[in-house]
Every structure is written in C-alpha cells, then in structure tokens.
Image (cartoon, rainbow, N blue to C red; front, side, top):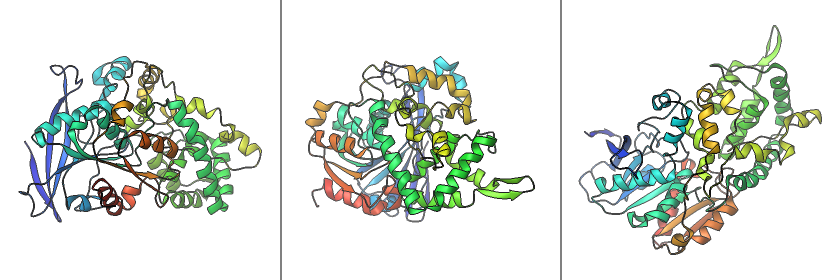
Length: 433
C-alpha cells in the first residue's frame, strides 16, 4: 500500500517492492526495497518520463530531501523521480550488526551479503521498472557508486534505459581493487599536501593530535578506538568540496586544557565519531572492496595491503621525522572492524567477503562498445574517490558517451551544485551542448 503526502512544491509517494534476494532463484527468499516517488506539485497526473536515482556508497539510502532541494528541483522540471533505497539501505530490508545475525553465523552472513552488489541492484531496478513504468525505459542518474551501478546497467540491461547520467561514477572495467588503491594513495598524498599548503598551521596541529593518540590510545564516546590510522582516515573529508575547511576547523579546536593537562576536547571527539563511525552505513565497510571484485581473485583487504607499498603513509615514521602525518580516505581497512563498535560483530563476516573468489564479472566491454543509450558523465578532475584516468579510460570504451571533465567541483559536485551539474548532463545527452 502506497502513501502520498506533500512538501513545498512536491508530491511524494512512498512505495515498497518485493524482490528476490537472489534473482537467479525467483521462487526463493524475498526482500523489500523501498523507493520514494517525487513529482512536481500540480503535475501529479501528467505523463512524465521517469528518472531513477542511484545513491553513492555502497550502503547509503537515497537522499531525504525537503521540497525541491539540491538537484531534485531541476529533475522535476522534466521527470517523475524515483529515489531508490538500494537493497540493504535506508527503509529497505536492513543489513547491519543488529539484523545480520538473523541469517546465522559469519559464513551465512557473507553468503547473504554477496547478493548486495551492483549486479543485484540493477536487477532490482529492472523488476521495479516493470511495475512502475509499465515496461517503458527510464533514465538513470547515478552518483559515485550509483554510477558503477549505471555502468553495469548499460552492460547487462540497456534496453531498460532511455538515458544514463553519471556523476563521479565511471569505474574501472577490469581493474582489480589493488589497481584502484595503487592509483588512490598518490591522490591521497596530493590532497594531504594541498591541505597543509592551504593551512600551514594544521601541520603542527595534526602532528600533535597524532602524538597524543599514539601515547594515550583514546576511546571515543560509544567505544570507538581512536588510533593513529583512524585519525589519518579523517582525510575522507578532503574528497568533498568544503572538506579541507571542515578538517581545518576540526583540528583548530582539537585540544582543551584540563587539570590533568591537555586532552582531546569533547567537541572534537564527537565530531570525529560522526565522521568515522559506520553505524549508519555498515554496508559501505563490508562491501566497499567487493565493488571492484571480479575475475576470480579475492580482494584480500586490498587497501591495507597496498598501503604498505607507500611508506610515506606510515605515521610513526612521520612523527619520528618531525613531520605531520598524511591523511587517507576512500579506503576501508581491517582495523576498522576492531575500532568501530558498529563493525566489530561483523569482523569475521568481512574477512570471509575479503577471501571470496566467486564474484561474477560486473561489466561487459564488448556490449559497452556497442552502446546505443545516450550517456553523459561528469568526471571530477583528481577526484579522491574515483580515479580520473580510470574513468576516462572507461568513457572511451562506452560508445557515444559524452564527458564533462571539470576541476570546479570535488566528488560531491551533485550535492554542492546539483541543478547546474544535472542541467549540464541533461544537455549533453540531448545533444543541446
């Protein structure tokens, strides 16, 4: 049963769909997928083309907008929009430390989660599309991991698409996770050094925090173990448009003076916890490297292994040399399943996923080379989250794809300037630009 309601300028309808857990076994177990239909007020009965939005991640539900916020207002000028909570996220059947034990032990949990990658998400979309549009193709808008899903869509079910719009989400088609992280660590270093160049005083502030953490091994509110590696991973902020400024303000007030000497402030600890905890999105940690898994090779904690090839990220050595630590980001490592209370019960499950080798291929280069679906992609120059060269290589493979390469935005360009970004992509697929 669907429920409709209004916000300023928008009519919303909550919709729930039953889909197979394993689409290869349509008569087997089923899960629920939630989506929110959005249409401009006064156009509820209009015949409008559909646009389905796939959020970045993995592990995040679709945006919860109020009215015509961000890119949604631009989309509603032309489309009826479906904001999809990908399986396991948002209001869809949840997958987290609280619910996964219902599956059984770690082995059963890992087998269950193997059905939560881009391939299953696209098959959900196709099952839902038949019900929503009556079989008519729709436009997909994919942000980040949502773009990975859209690329899989183009590889496996292009007949379901009238157009594809990707923002910061063109994946490597055949690269292993190791290749992804060998490209990522130099970007992380560049972002770190650029931050210290912008805010020179932060070099000393970061060094002081790292020294304090190494000596005191603090535990954040709720039980999060704050290690040097955890502190370095605050570099995930540097992949967003305002992230360097947020990191600066965070470091600015890191310490307070107490009767026992200087200590990390409560405000700093609360802010750090909000950035580092995966309580709201455990699938991001569990399936992050699995996004790249194919070809019969395990990911085997790729980002952690590859990090050893870049000794400049060894914080202990930096401190010994009197230098500030380099920050990291867009890297999920095994220590997180020791530090984060939301992930600790899932540590063995994560290990089993990292060992898994039977991942199916995600992309079909031959089919992409014969693509007939209009496609446009925003590629953010020196994107922390998705390697630019990998993206451009994929763009050259997809027949007819038009790219907009820009250094005006970081990875969150759709969030920061959604109407402009979306307007540009719509213009490209329509041949208006």
